[in-house]
Image 1 (cartoon, rainbow, N blue to C red):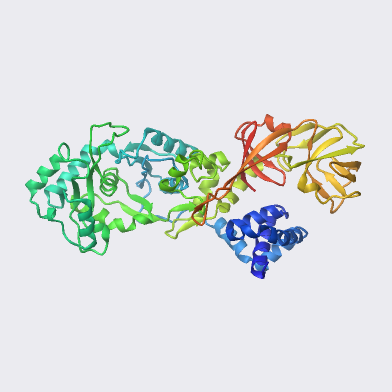
Image 2: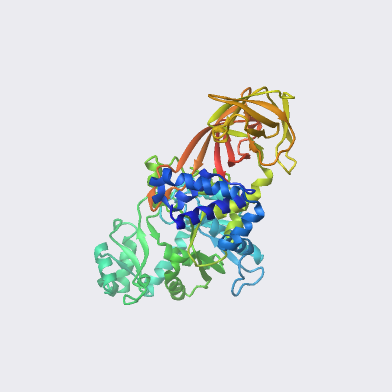
Amino acid sequence: MDDELKRLVRKVALQNAFEHDGQTRDKIVLSKILGTRPELRNRVKEINAEISAIVSDVNKLSLQQQQSEIEKNFPELLALKEKIEERVGLPPLENAENGKVVTRFPPEPNGYPHIGHAKAAIIDEEYARMYNGKLILRFDDTNPENERLEYYAAIKVGLDWLGVKYDKVKNTSDDIELIYQKGLELINSSTAYVCTCKQEVISKNRREMKYCKCSTLDQNQNNDRWKKMFDKFKAGEAIVRFRGNMSSENTVMRDPVLFRIIDGKHPLLGNRYRVWPSYDFAVVIEDSIDGVTHAFRTKEYELRNELYYAILDALKLRKPKMMEFSRLEFKGMPVSKRVLKPLIESGKVSWYDDPRLPTLEALKRRGITPEAIRKFVLSLGFTKADTLAPFDVLESFNRKIIDEQSTRLFMVKDPKKLVVTGLPTSTITIPNHPTKDLGKRNVTVDENFYLSFDDTKDLKPESKIRLMGIGNVQIKTVSDHLTGQYTGDELVEEILKVQWVSQKNYQKLKIQIPKALFIDDNFNEDSLEEIEVYVEPYFLELKEGSEIQFIRFGYCRKESASLAIFTHK
């Protein structure tokens, strides 16, 4: 292992240990290293010993020593944390008047909401509330081929879960007749025309900055073609185009599409309409007539602002203030439906609630709280800077929220038997949380225990361990199982503390561990690990959806009596 890699390993080990009461584990560090350096997967055996040595060295340091080393050698770790914690709230809006600000969240009902939708909805709501204004939920439903009633409902469910409160709900399709009127106004003022050129010709003309022959038609010809779009022309045979500027350096302005023919059945309006406005046209009309004062969208639409205001000018409509912010997605967790839909159709991902995904349903199932998402979004601020956030930044916000309400339970992986003689009691009382009053549980034990193999692999005769909540045990023999003698409850420094479950009563449990869905744009076939563990039977008494911290493993959300989903460390 070269010096650069050693430095990276130590950095990861220090960061993880410092965030988890001074202790980390080699498997955790290895996993994080492989997440950032996947090319090392073929060298796991080679680097494992070095990682174990570095982890052991880091674990021997006190929290103060770990922080001192981070401050000296890796100050960016603390700087990033401080930067995230310092940024709270959003910057003031230009020309915003208290009580008069109107924002809108305009999702297209063509899929399940994801973290990007959450960012947009939260920003829209925060600004509306900041100025005692109003938020409109407006479904941008003008492409019947992609939209389904299921998605309208899913978006509302997602917003309710996030706690986003809106003052009005509407659909763009509600105003289809008004949008037709505005389209006809542009045609009659010669600001738009109906084009029947083939798509390849249109594309070629736009590339070469050449005007289309259809742009020379007179008003009567355009009106006749407009009427034919509703009953004569087939899909793809005619479109309405805005008369922009074919020589513009901004390609958006090269006579863009305002209306097209789509024969698909609309989820709300059925087959009553077949001429549908483009997003570019519908958003202009809707924002203006809805009284929106400040409209926000992601920065890939920034070049479309020129068209947005040109249409408003042509129709002499009131002008909202358009502003852009960066998209939000996580590294290795794409939000694009073009990427996710094939994964679901091929069975590589179970559904939109698969815990590997950045959809709101998946984040909820994984154990991420809406409060954490809101804090995370606001910590990013209102910026156009690309936001490909590491998932562990969201985790850090979530950890602070769930820690105080998560029952601590023992969990054993790869069980190894231990027989202990001399135990003074058959019932152990254990608090459900080290500092919060979450109650206590009574655990019935006899001399037979299960320990995790990782906690036993280095034990030898005469080794001493402390069974957490019970006391100290001196190991007597090590073979296919361990034997030991109880030696009392006196606290002893530098003794290995191990968790356990009773052989007399335990619960088998599967834990799903979601990992990065993509590594370097390639689907990660190992992105959902499933392990089988033994846990305390008290797990069965917890409600489904409860958050648990399995000691020295991490936080998990109870999915069912036999399944939990790993949330994060």
